[in-house]
Amino acid sequence: MTSPSALARLLDAGPVVRVELGEVRGSSPRDAGAVMYVGARASLGSVGGGQLEYMAIDQARAMLASGALKGGMDVPLGPEIGQCCGGRVKVSLRLVQDGPAECAELSEMQADRPTVYIFGAGHVGRALARAMLPLPCSTLLVDNRAEELALAADLKQSQTPLPEALIRSAKPGSTFIILTHDHALDFMLGVEALARGDATYIGMIGSATKAARFAKYARAQGQDPAGLICPMGRKTASKDPAVIAAMIIAEVWPALEHHHAKALT
Image 1: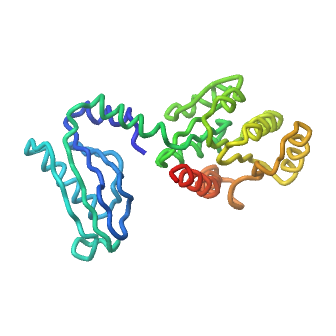
Image 2: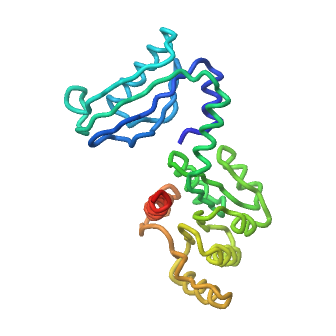
């Protein structure tokens, strides 16, 4: 996912062309509206990869070389370009003439994306936050330990002694992933998330024993534990943080997609 700050850095390096998939017919590697930005030596984002993307980058850089302001492509995604999707796409290209406005537009677009709160900046929390970076969602890594957050300086984060306040102020439909260093804190955050009644997904790292203890605690607090998944993530024997992160995303992402699809109807 292209960040406004990354786009600003690309714009600082020189002129940039915005490449966007317009009309999409049949099968294509990305949906209409997918955007990438192309500079003379670097690019951000993707319109699907493969030959289509190579062609779009070449066209964008030809525009930069010629000084053209706009361009377009109508591409059949078949054997003639070495791509087997079988559809057809129209691609629009335009020179970014107002960098701050483009960054502001990107920020506004991303504000509408699902928000995922990851509570706990330990090895799994950091791996999970990094694994979610390319996904079309906004992720916030939360912890009260400065030393753990310092190991995730590249990630959007919040150091706070009151993480429950972030749950209370989160926008409707947010996702809460709980994997702190403290079982009591996990339980408190789980109950706070359940009390909202509007979360897209609530998950907690743990075991069947921890799940049973949380269920008892949640009921004592007047909450139905059925709305929280513990242990979260697809089953794996691996202890590797990157593998565990992948298993959690495999469970979380369908819930995010379903919620987003409902919000659009």
